[in-house]
Image 1 (cartoon, rainbow, N blue to C red):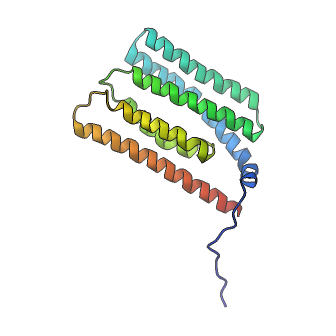
Image 2: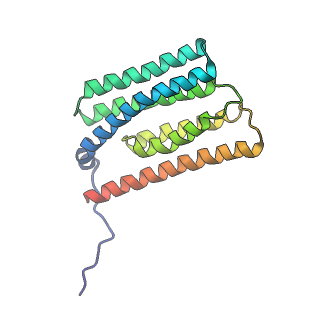
Image 3: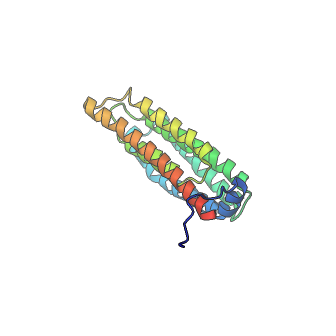
Length: 194
């Protein structure tokens, strides 16, 4: 008689899951902080090339500097290990700040500048996959960013309606893909523990 493979996996508690993956999630969060700190420099250059020197640019520069400073402070204060809830709180607040600064950059860009939609689609997909926050915290942030990006489609001047529909479709698909992959990765990680 052959051995049958079980298709049911015992449910892993959140506590066991968090304890097991805290070390990996902490390292991932530190990589994300560093990545965004470095990406802030080219984004600041893009802001300058679009806005030139002026109040809008200086406001965005101060906002990007605050993102950079909060990331540096969090990296220094959490060290190599920290309480999982403390890191989650800092990462969550910092993610909100990053998304708000990027939205401010998008709003301040000229109505005929559409390049930021590429960054928005990338953020909607990648944030769901790589940011090590609980889905219950991350999903509302990404959905809110997606809705705000869609709202930015209204005042922008597109070359054609088909271009506008393409941007909406790409934003929708990237958000959906990111959410689907995040849910799959979470299920896979839970199965590894069971």
